Image (cartoon, rainbow, N blue to C red):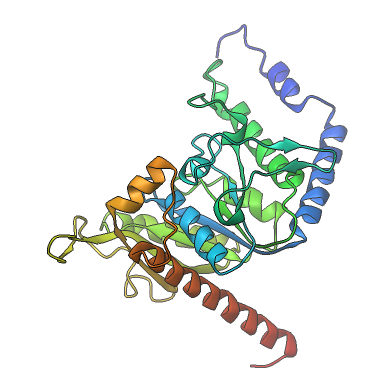
Amino acid sequence: MPEDIDLKGILHKLRGREDSQVTKQLVDQSLAVKLRMGPVKRKIVVLSGKGGVGKSMVTANLALAFARKGARVGILDVDLNGPCIPHMLGMSDQRFAFTEEGVIPPRGPLDLKVASMAFFLAEGAPVRWAPPMDLSPIWLGALEMGTIRELLADVVWGELDFLFADLPPGAAADKPPVLVSLVPELDGAVVVTTPSSVARAVVGRSIQYVRDLGIPLIGLIENMSGSICHRCGANLNPLEGDAAGPSSFPEVPFLGRIPWDGEISRACDRGVPLMDPEHPMVRRFDSLAEGIQKQLDLKREMAEKILRGEP
């Protein structure tokens, strides 16, 4: 480490105040999070075993599926360095509104409420900055954790039926523990993967990681699971394997498969989400939403039986 870099000084600037004040700030934020999360009925994290599986696309369309059923839905975009939920929902030009009550999240299609780092940034602006490179993992990590706490504590979600937290690619090892510590009443996690054989081991580790954190597993979704030829109707399978099929992890609820579809991919890229209720992909996400709702209802019934002392 270069001698001219004062590590203690940098970390002190990160804290910005004495340790006692930091502790008080964290306690205040935790209490604020509990107040903000109080009116939110269901809190679900969406994560993936590896990057590039279409997790954000799945999150955005699941949220739309629940909103189509009349639910009040919000999305917390926890991917601070590559936020893309606003772009997929056509909300790139929107920004947060700051009031005395707190930060008001922009509203998207079907009245979705969205909180994302993208609302602080100009188009194409980077989130991470470089110097000093040998210290960046320390202070960037601290800033990221603080940002997540502030988003949870400051955003005025109001009454919601569902809040989906879209986690960064990969295992995102540092983000779920923060959410668990701040929102211990998480209803569960949805794991998104692809059918690639390479994904199987990664999916298994992600499942075990979620369990180790004490987050209930709602189920698995296999994305990019083949595609339908629009000319002949044949089922095409560009990826070999069955990484998340019912037989791969029999102890985990399998929610369903999403075929690769160029139309929904282009819709996300253009920021014009598919809204036609008769579109095959829209109906597929409606079906996945029904599966998630069934799993949530089942877990609630089991919890109520335990409270009543029933076997």
